[in-house]
Length: 147
Image (cartoon, rainbow, N blue to C red; front, side, top):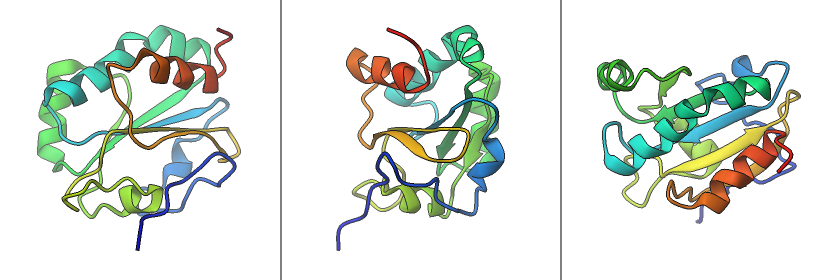
């Protein structure tokens, strides 16, 4: 049975991570990444870190999720100083709910989702590629940037 991937129009799924708690006055960007301190995942998160000012102007909140243990996330955060929370999903409950468990069944694949303040999904990129500028632009459009 294939995993069901969350799509635009779906509601933010209820998971052990309580992602609704991250909703605010603006949109919520939910980033899944495979593993801390790997080149593409570091690039994925650092690109959004580097655009923190634009995210703030859009009143966007960000949460980044991986199956890494908490101590690894703390090291990753200390090295790169992310302005958003890194959340551990060791049981993969959130990755399963979004349909982004990788082919090994051990980690999440890189993915990006945007939810509006009510929790409705407005963008789903289940195979996010950090080098794809079109995907990056789509994220910011979904967050409300007029491009």
